[in-house]
Length: 356
Image (cartoon, rainbow, N blue to C red; front, side, top):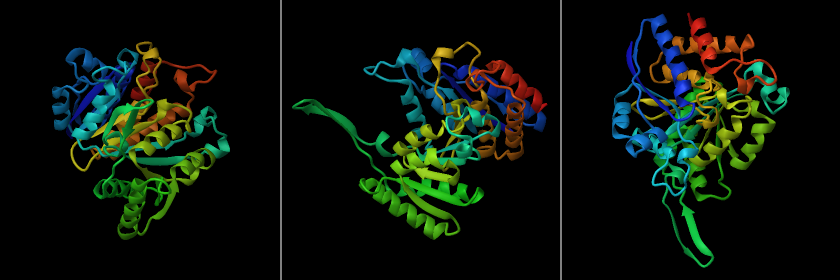
């Protein structure tokens, strides 16, 4: 296969972790006879510094033409001024919207070798394997917002809006994924309070009952789901929800394995390239110090191979090697506890060498 993978290293530790993922993809291409072109483009804070725009036109056009996109991380204290004309995160929101990346897939899986790193007891968290499907281009993050004068000073508002079509398409993505996994689908909403959630529940129920009657389907209110994630996470398979609830719940769930450094994600649409990235931030406090955990980005590269390029065996090989490295006790600082640890480059070396 010949494929173009657009690399967006971004800010903070982004360039370091993308470099290691690139090395892994190069080794996979060598092992399986593929050709991957992997040009790099600016995004986020560094793009603001150079172009005054967190998503320059040349970056967006290159991503449109690519077969898949691998992102590092964006943001940092340098660009955190709330009064700034634009911020790094605006680049992420725009690329999702421009490329129609309406569904965020975030697997949350615990590793037996790292259960002691989880804040939860082993008997609660062991065996957790959840795929969150978060709607990504609608809801309150993209609704109308504003401020106006108020007798106390100011009044601000954000509007949560979802249409039937937006709900249908993301529920179908989740249901299709559930069919390939354990056949269980959970929809999360706040239908006891929000009219938007009442529509969400109505549409989701119709789609599943008419198109996916073979699935085991249930509905959970978002506040109850927040409790279930720390009391009985193993009971869930695929979870689908809106943009705001998905943002919060996936961050909560990211603590189940014990480290953000182990969790990848994918943002996909109905056509065009998918965008793959680790779920953690840019961690500017450790940037350039060879301390970052590259495994989430390497696992994101595996998701890229499977989801966008249909290279299942190649993706499996990466995930198997990551598992073997962890099983043998190799750790970066974030997951080492009081034990010994290795750096970003050394972890990359281990993965690449074992892929050989």
